[in-house]
View 1 (cartoon, rainbow, N blue to C red):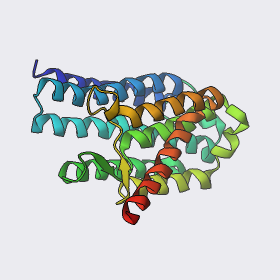
View 2 (view 1 turned 135 degrees about the vertical axis):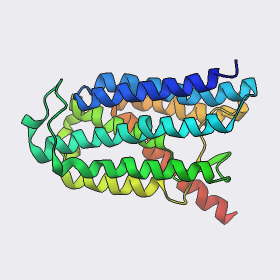
View 3 (view 1 turned 30 degrees about the horizontal axis):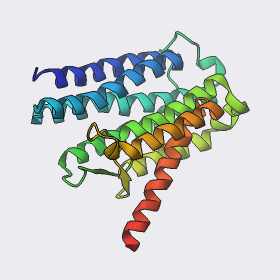
View 4 (view 1 turned 180 degrees about the horizontal axis):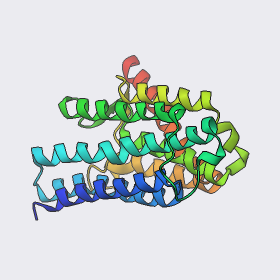
Length: 241
């Protein structure tokens, strides 16, 4: 039983590797499904460890190592593909082919490096028990995934706007900053099995469902923007109090 949480963490890593391959093969829909698998496993491993009372230093290290791939390399690859299309031309992005390299798109992986730094700092930071300091890597991945799917389906005709190189480069910088910032942000992990302790999470889930009905995949990015703004507002209220 004590190995179940670690197996879930390794499943997170497995799904992350699969998501990476499908992202590089320019199949963001399949990549999104594997990323969802990583996301669910990332939630489940901590919950299972707490339920079984088998938390361990190994589990903590494995969790961050898996997250570097699933929520660090994968979103970097998603931004790389978006930049590749806009800087090296549509002919450079062919579904099913992953081996054409676009040098102008390589800065996308600055986000992956920033995610690795964030996860390394997280393991050493004793403050991040009930809330996060800086944007979490899963939240960052959800934001980028929303953009990738919006471009893929060209929802609301936003594909050309999102694929502007200056915007994508700016997003790499802004997201990398937020990952390693000192901005307190709400913790979204399930802390217990009672309604009261999960009320905030449920409210965000309901809001996301409403946004998804209206905005489709773009809701993934919008809900993270709302999360960031709400966290910054909460920080100001806390300081004021």
